[in-house]
Amino acid sequence: MKKILDILSEEMGKAFEAAGYDASLGRVTVSNRPDLCEYQCNGAMAGAKQYHKAPFMIANEVAAQLEGNKAFKEVAAVAPGFLNLKLSEDYLLSIVKEMKSAEKFGLEAPEKVKTIVIDYGGPNVAKPLHVGHLRAAVIGEAVKRMERYAGHKVIGDVHLGDWGLQMGLVITELHERQPELCYFDENYEGEYPVEPPFTLAQLEEMYPTASGKSKVDEEYKAKALAATVQLQTGRRGYRALWKHIMNISVEDLKKNYANLDVDFDLWLGESDAQPYIPGMVEKMKQDGFAHISEGALVVDVAREDDKKEIPPCMILKSDGAAMYDTTDLATILQRSHDYNPDSIIYVVDKRQELHFEQVFRCALKTGLVAPETELKFLGFGTMNGKDGKPFKTRDGGVMRLSSLIAQIQDEMRDKIATNEAISAEEAEATAKMVALAALKYGDLSNQASKDYVFDVEKFISFEGDTGPYILYTIVRIKSILAKYAAQGGDLNAVELMAAQAGAEKQLQMQLAQFNTMMQNAAEETAPHKVCAYIYDLANAFNHFYHETKILGEENETRKQGLIALLILTRDILETCIDVLGFKAPERM
Image (cartoon, rainbow, N blue to C red; front, side):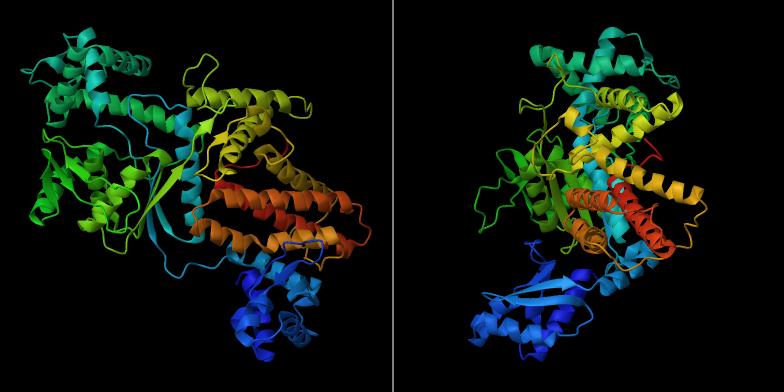
């Protein structure tokens, strides 16, 4: 079904046309003065110059054409030429009824179903997830779900960092500790052990130890670099160790991402793109795109209209080694080969914007993807502590993501445990759901590109613009519906009715904005727009709830209409939070 603003704009356009003016002037927007009207049209102001006529005269003529129009309860021309509009309750009812019966509440399918690859997550193997990984996971998951809900074919790829120096560091540190292992014997020809020579805890300890050593010991660093090259060139024992590292790390990563309700379709990494590099580099040379500059192989990506310097994209270092540019380009080539995507969206730290600008330009210039392929950089800001600096533990270290989740769950459990009607087991499960909502909503309600302050006390509050407040609203609706059913009411037999009060109408109007919001949020890859919508919807519902008798309504027909309105509100709220990546419990 059409979006409500498009429907109303069509009605206004007909009125402008009937009055002798261009129909395009009839664009309707939500009023910026809700104390005066619900919607407004400023077309008369725009048409004044075109038609050499006072805007107030145009507005009056258009208003006259709308007398008796079924869509509007009130149309007022006000100086200097605005058209203030109030919607007819019956017309609004027809819209929300159609939404209730339509699939996806009437959200129109896209004109073209796109194949979209979303690159998000980006963890390095052999390292535990920390708070710095939160935003990529949470934003990427929400964008993936939004685009799927909009009707597109979406593939989420974690894109593991599994082929770089951290591997050489771990191998070198293991060699220092256990040089007798068969993996380090170049003459060993037997089968390698099935069980790894280290535990997850040992692996997670080895990397920071090795990294620290490499920063102060040049000889150690040289060994790690050599081990990295030997791994990448196929040394048999190192490849076997790499597989052990991958198996242990990926199993742990999957568990941690599952705790965030984040799921990837692909668990590919830099290593999977390696086979594409030689052919890609050779073709860039043959086609005349790649040339030697200061010993390195580069592709120039600067344009004449650039307002800032865009350095060349480096394909190979002077020693012939591949770089991040190389791997990212090979990954684009791999995705193009495997999925022929219409769009590839990268959800990464905004500080990498220049890198991806170079890579995208190079990919398009050298034909790694079709010219019409969209390569989109969705850069996110930093999650900061209350001191305005990147979020740290109390002792100044980088907090593990699992520790952060556990901390919020503990605080939510303490709050929920005050409800004596809930068992300890249910409190535990509910605490996990509400904590996840607090964490995700606290992040997603901010525009992705902006830094934000991670304030646990604020995020877990049941008041204000928070995840728990949204869930509390949903649980409140569920409670009313459960009581209605317990009193013998049939939730499947209720029908929506025209609004009778201001708060009831405001709630219906907020529901009617769902399609507009969801389409815009998907097109702009903007989860914060979904958050803003459900916060407004929750506020509209709670205002309605406090002003309206629902279960106490004596008129049975009207009571059923109110219950139907609650059902639609619940369903749209739950659809939105599912798109954002969390769920609501039955009670709190």
